[in-house]
Amino acid sequence: MNYNKFYLIIFFLITCSNVISSLLKMPTENGESKMLVEDEKQNMVYLIIFPRISTTPNHWTMCLKIESWLKLSGIRFYRISNQFLLGSPDSGIAPFVQFNGKYYEGFDNIKEAVKHLGKKKLLEDDREAEIILILENYLLKILTKDKTTRHRRIGGKKSGGLDYLIKDNGVRAQFFQSHPQLFEWRWQEIVLNNDKKIKFEMGFEFWNEFFGIERGIENQEVNEKEILNFMEKHLVIILGSDVSSDGVGSSNYSYSDGTEGYSHSLNKEINNDYLWNLDDWQYFYEWMDKFVENKLEEYFTKEKYSMEGKLREYLQKHSWDQVSDEKIYESFEKIIQKIVNMLGSQKFLFGDQPSLADISLFSILFQFFEGHLNIPVIKHFFIKKGEKPERDAIDFIGKAIVIELKSKSNCEIEEEGPSFIENCGEMEGNDKYIDKRIGLLHSYVERMKEKIGLGSFKWINLTRYPWPLNYEEVDYITDKYSGKFLNIIKNKMK
Image (cartoon, rainbow, N blue to C red):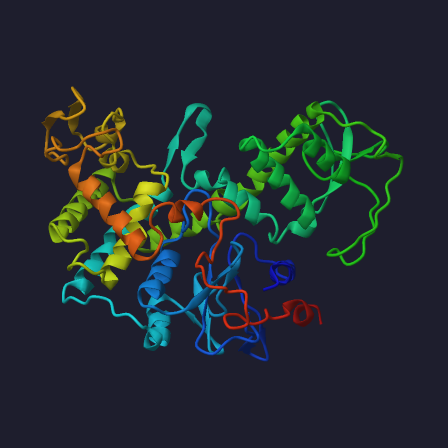
């Protein structure tokens, strides 16, 4: 499969659009949607989902839900990254699928379209609908509320929300190859803190190598020579141009088609004879880090149409934007108690095999364990033995709970108001949760990972470079599984 071609497809699709910070719809021709995979294979499900990131393999619950359902149903499918930008033709949402010449969006529509291909049968139970309704109406909204909660810190700046995505290495490395404003950012002239004026082009190769060096420095796998070679290759010292330390300066550029090969001219430039040093890199990296952070904030957290802004709209639509911490605490308490009661000594909700309700629960619940939590009363549920609880977590709801950890094998609780922490005499080790119910739910999540083939280190490996979408040992590159990507470039540029 030609991934470079796909990146160009996405790149040209979004540069021809005025939509910023929201998913872009697949193009249409004569009122009909064009297929992303033009030579698709019969009965192959092409699942278009968000990229995997370093925080978690699926930061969007619906992506994991559909992916898990396809796996457990024994339906063959191939994942395609939407590059954080591409949405379905009808509603502009992700995930969505291409299947036998049509697009489908929404879990129920996708399930109905491809369920006949299933080679495995999920466990069914009369209580499934009730559980799924509780999960969607309460647990998912609690998770969404947490992901949009911000707290005022020193200096008036609020932290929380989706800020964790800004620092995520997987997001940083994959986002900038396909952003709609790539052409606008492409040419940069800046002044470093040491007063050196430089110019550079932010092309595909630049971003790949820049984030490669960033990963190498973090993992102590890059040396000084590699850093200096990057600077020699991509940065040029300039004199006599009006430039700004904050962004794009002015200069006279000329380039061809902007994709492969280009020419440019600058007045009074000094190039490869100049000796770069690590101080130059430090100044350059500080500017780049700020630039990357600002652009990611625009997409994920700051703007009305950012990802966080869209989540806030979702909460407002369902009247959850003003729900109190006390209500969140009470709802979460009831949900986890109900789930634990249903599980009992079973592996899954209704027995030894997972059901659709298990898939729904897993796709939401795992994010409480692996995602960044913002609401104090929710964080308090997930305290591990040996960790110090945050007093603020209970101040919001008027409960005073003092936890004394006197040894590694027991804990005592003094409280006013109802307790949400059960007997923890059996909990041992710092990796165990004080609330025994949370420990049981964590084990449940790990069993679900095993069931979809991602036990042990396989799940963790998906959060590491190159953040693979298709991890199965089957050769997906052959024509047996995938066809050619649609040449959107040609259609969009006519």
